[in-house]
Length: 174
Image (cartoon, rainbow, N blue to C red; front, side, top):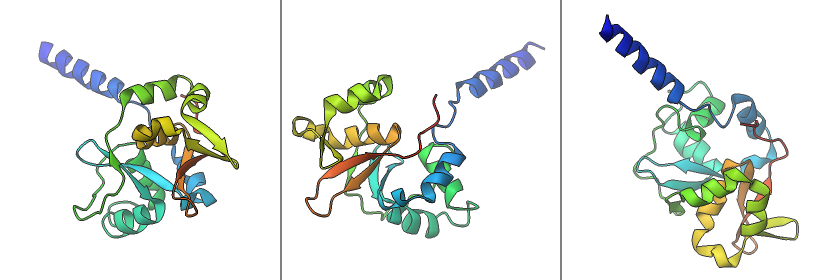
């Protein structure tokens, strides 16, 4: 009988310790139907690093070439990928240009107060938000923190700089 309670408590603990998904299916549907699809996504790699990949690469290389037969549609695939739930096949030959390790301090600051975070780490120029030059060595981590808080990442073809834009529809409040 005590084994039964132990197993029951273990299952309850595991169930409660799973966090709710940050990106809802409804949010991802809106995202895939918007013009934000031209931007970059923050993709988790198997070794704990993250990669900034153009959405077109995510759709073509990761979804259609390697995960199409596993997921019902692109939205289901993105839901799993962005929420780090389930397995997504990421090919070994995927060329990674913008690979980085997360920075927990930056993520905590952004999650605590995103507006203060944006004021500290970014500046606005011509309606776009760029990472302050003094934080250039943490640029990818800052971009990830912005992405995780509902901002989308772009790379300017004119000057080659990264910038973020606020999503016209918000992530659900946690």
